[in-house]
Image 1: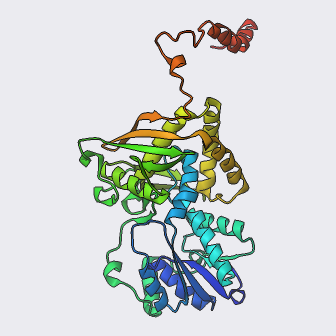
Image 2 (image 1 turned 90 degrees about the horizontal axis):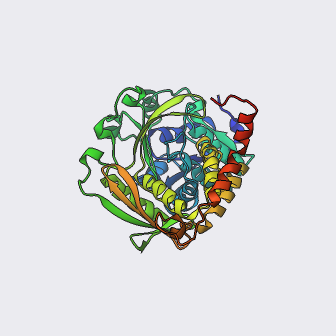
Image 3 (image 1 turned 90 degrees about the vertical axis):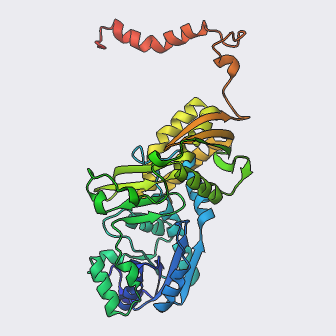
Length: 411
């Protein structure tokens, strides 16, 4: 059943890929809601041509078609801020799918405002996290917007029923590709590519070697390590090996070099926000390098308590991104604190890539808090008075000594 009164919906902005699902959605919206459909296709660096979506939308009678290159905005305003927080979900996942959704939601609402649309629609299923991410973002940015989620409304429940719908409604289908059904559900952008479904639905089954698209296996990676020098300004990479690059160019380059060296593969079972566990595989070569390097430059430039407080913030920040609360006031509050901490995170990090591993092997900064005169194991010429440590230790032991003197059992 439609989630909104069909007669109240005059124009809908649809997140449109040009694939089978969203092509069916265009016709279904036109038929069910008798409304005008505006399609929006985002280029987030997914590695496939997006312009063919225009011809497919035109063939479906769509008059207003948006195809936007959002790669720089995606990395600059979403990926980079997230990596300033060293964000990982459940200890491993670098949130490649999660961080793209708030940008798509933002642009859909902008287009809705530009075109006078009163609703948005998406192709996310009722089982996944993306429906939550898209809709929380939409409601945060335009509280009165109507949201249409066809997978929660229609009775088309399989690829076969979608194909039958196409046949009944004269929707053009590339039958050569439709017969080659991929065993995996994949999502890609400049930060990562993900794989779900197929053999991966058995958590015991190892992913097939030919599944991976962005990286060679660590076993097949070069026998010689590759070194990179990353330059940071306020927590963001601005140059690689001395060459200034834009945010999207940085990530594109790191993906290439990381993938060539077997970096960034991940196989996990994660807890979805909607309640179920899901097994997924991810390739995030550039992001894996960025995380390692960022922690290295922070280790040199951040005050200890600031660094530790950031680490306490991070799981909360990761949950907010994963669950779709990018546009929430609490994420904005955390981001403000995180960004303030990055004012001194400047300098260079040298990393070594070798057969799937990333190792920080050097770091330097004009803002370094590392004082060699104090830290040295050699004669420090009085820079540090070791006798001061006695009082420090006794004060910190005081509460434990009091407990022991009261006879409390600490064993």
